[in-house]
Length: 115
Image (cartoon, rainbow, N blue to C red; front, side):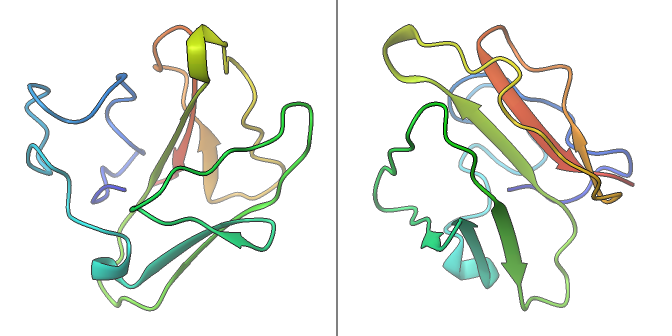
């Protein structure tokens, strides 16, 4: 998750933030709980301390909840395990506050906030 760039997330590079000269620091901004943020795939709440496996060819509703008054923006980046491509698997639907991120590396899907 990121602080807002007025037009959405500025990168969707693979891996962590190390060496990407991110304005968010090399380690991002800490855990989701530190920002009073919850991310859910259907009713399954994600945790920063574990890996969540999703079933291929299943549609999930992704929900982002924050009680933080200074919440500014987000980046959801999805990649597949063992070289499986995740190109084009994130769909933003009709929510006018969310957009697909076209600058992701090959094999990675992304979505972010709109300005």
